[in-house]
Image 1 (cartoon, rainbow, N blue to C red):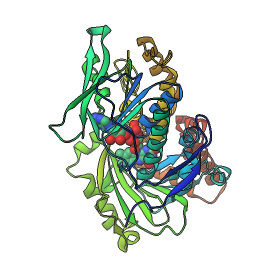
Image 2 (cartoon, helix red, strand yellow):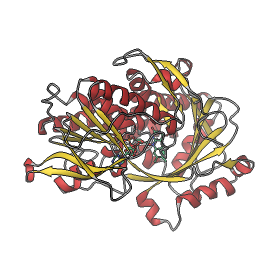
Image 3 (cartoon, rainbow, N blue to C red):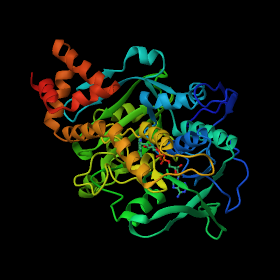
Image 4 (cartoon, rainbow, N blue to C red):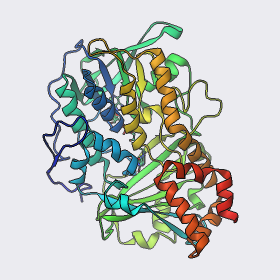
Length: 479
Ligand SMILES: Cc1cc2nc3c(=O)[nH]c(=O)nc-3n(C[C@H](O)[C@H](O)[C@H](O)COP(=O)(O)OP(=O)(O)OC[C@H]3O[C@@H](n4cnc5c(N)ncnc54)[C@H](O)[C@@H]3O)c2cc1C
């Protein structure tokens, strides 16, 4: 069975920067990205990586009139290991880029609530998302990244080509060029090969005044910005999650309903297990654990997931008559945006310098509690474009702009990420989590009040901030 149901879709583009022509896409068809530019061609901005963050950065830079070169290692359509949930906050940027009509024409699962459970008994708490947001389709979806990323990349391709830029797929950046010494270092360009992963192909080098790292958790530009140029750590195992995903055939009976997050304890220890339907026939099932916790356990995520599915009393019957979609079993790392203790420069870690900046996972922005990274990926691509100054042909991204960009992003995301770290720590205290879930599940005034508070936490930024305040937590659990 295929994950995405093949269908050709047509949607009318809408919103800022959308030219308004009919966009057509089938996420199983190749995307025509045009000719490959000669090495040495001039660009204003080079974006390394064409996932959601890179597509967003390339689209917003192109909408400012810049000539963009977008380099992507894979060839679309391509899968990306993920839980596939796209939250309400992502939808605003997706709408702004004119991609939402295309998405809504594809098979997807509309999320109306989130079910949580803890390691104790069978207590489950269902937190409803605001019904008006579910109704007007702004609460969020889950749909395979095969579909979502395809549509984002296709839109970026249109915008980049319209503004005189180029896109190369199957181009893996292998080398990042750095000039200068000490404080005056700048990143000037990148090299790689067309036919990227195959060795022996001709190396092409491209230079530009702005280099954007959007290559995910192992982005070569992020490595250059952190380790090579500033001797700062890129990966921190206390803030990176190892995650594993499979798709299973399972009838959800509807294309609207809950996604589920379970903190099961047992063999999964401090990890979490999720079930996110992506349409009415397929569910995305996965688990994740901090890498530092993983190191302490003598087991693999694949085995932990098999334990949940085959042996856990709560799930084994549910999966007994289902089948895994062949080839969908994949692992990946999640770089979280939780604040680092004694960070040497910026939070969550350095992600920009003169002439270069990172977005999305390359900047380590994933929420350590919810695992959401799509919103931060899209947002950072948008915000970064605001810090590129000058006309096409003389664009600049100065050291001062890099400083401001890093402070701005942490100002926007830091409070929620800081609170999410507290929540991540809270669910490690199993007795507290059990107590909270038990109280929230009760069919009385107190239970309803806690569920309301959790609803706000799931749908608003201020609700999330309140929820994580220690006092609020104590009030919920003990009073
Ligand atoms: C198992 C799992 C579950 C998750 N669940 C959710 C969820 O449900 N909701 C949510 O919001 N977030 C989730 N996340 C996080 C989310 O997947 C990421 O935050 C998001 O993909 C970040 O987008 P990105 O564009 O920064 O990076 P990516 O999506 O990783 O894209 C990076 C792109 O760069 C390309 N690339 C890499 N290296 C190079 C190179 N050297 N040269 C050229 N191109 C390169 C890659 O091919 C890729 O296309 C999950 C992550 C994992 C691993």
